[in-house]
Amino acid sequence: MGVESTLLIIKPDGVSRGLVGEILTRVERKGYKIDRIEGVTIDRALAEKHYGEHKGKDFYDDLIEYITSGMSVVAIIRGENAIENLRFLMGATNPLDATPGSIRGAYATSVTHNMVHGSDSADSAAREIELFFPESGR
Ligand code: DAT
Ligand code: MG
Image (cartoon, rainbow, N blue to C red):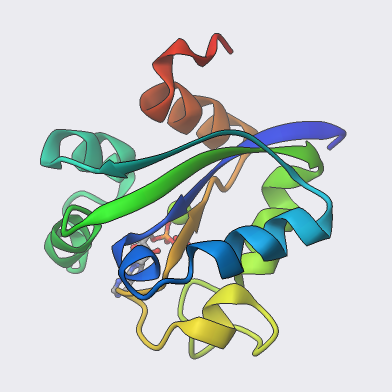
């Protein structure tokens, strides 16, 4: 609650499909600020740290392969209730369950290729921001 920072990732298909502007526009129009942003091809080591909680699950290998498959855009997003609200803007993990007005509901068709990532708690946000922007000094 209050002003928070969260990590947004526009996953490789969001970048390759040319939807970076569309997604960032939604985030900005909601009222959030982009504190840091960069394009990065996530390597396997970074992907395994980021998604460590999912290691051993049946979708893990597909998830790592996908997130490392091309350039992503990673950003620190800041504003009122940013963590919960960004996940609300993104919609449910499975685009089939996401409302059509959400990012995943509007643009994604499979749970693997679900376009965006947003930190799911204050602890996750702190951990993920440190992982992707270690110099950010939080
Ligand atoms: P979220 O990205 O909404 O936080 P998560 O942390 O549970 O969801 O899972 C991380 C990613 O793993 C998710 O964005 C897509 C993939 N994933 C999750 N559940 C899956 C499933 N049942 N089948 C395939 N991929 C899945
Ligand atoms: Mg998650």
